[in-house]
Image (cartoon, rainbow, N blue to C red; front, side, top):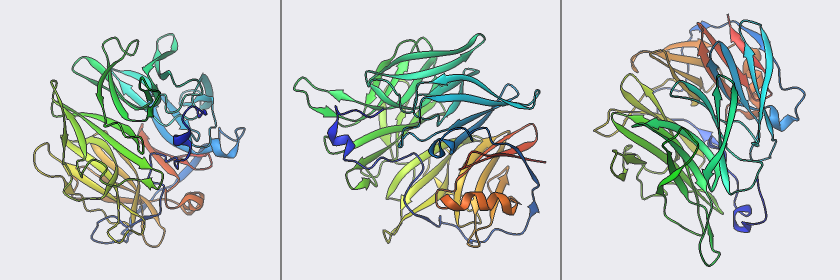
Length: 384
């Protein structure tokens, strides 16, 4: 929700959590996907056709309790409130379950065996941000995240819930700042306490975009933005804020510089970092996959493609949506980060992503032995 109370924010270009500048090649050995198994896909449905075009972009898919939950909408355009919609595998139909007071749904998270939605951009006031938790009796809304104008992620660590936010602070003189903040909850989202706040700067908007418990620590990742756009190396090249249960310390995980945005995943005792960085020549951005073992510097994971569109770690496998220099799109699959199998997607799905080719326009999920692919125009496909 955007109001007139922070005019300096309205002057900033709004950025979504995928790098929205032109994307070029990641650091890889080849840009061509090898010939592989071609997947056959069937249209599961197009449940968003009744919504306006901007709302139909699928942001995420999540299989939970034999249902496929759909995250969609555009929180830069403001397409909310947003209905919670899932596909019921048993009934073979799409069902509208609930409505969240958010401009979009960008994340579904499973936290302590509960499905949760983080309130990316509330349609309500900036006093509190929202967390929605699915219980045995239905969805419960916790409007309790202090000053959480954007709630991007949630994680469980050492008996507490933690949330990643874009915060809104006003000092005693009325000066407004927009730092990133991490808050913790001892009671599963009912109340929240501040844990960490990024540096307060009047000319920068900073957001904590992701949280990931790994190897006895909680890792938090952030991005910053000025009136000129996304800021590379916004914290002097340090990539993550790491919490060991006692203190928060910035750490340099990736040896490369010019990082803009990092999203983390867990795969076989490794922290996988999907990083977006400014190219050395300044022309656009590169998306690169790194593997971090908890001690030494993160290492590049070689992938045969031009760029990476989506990352999914599930069932002891790592899946990537990739595209090569011939605009062929495939799902790359590995169980060891060294050997990859490439499943080419059919032409009709490639066509659906072309209007948004640099951001890819496709989202990936896996469950029940099938891949599920969401498109930028609200369609969902299932592999046979």
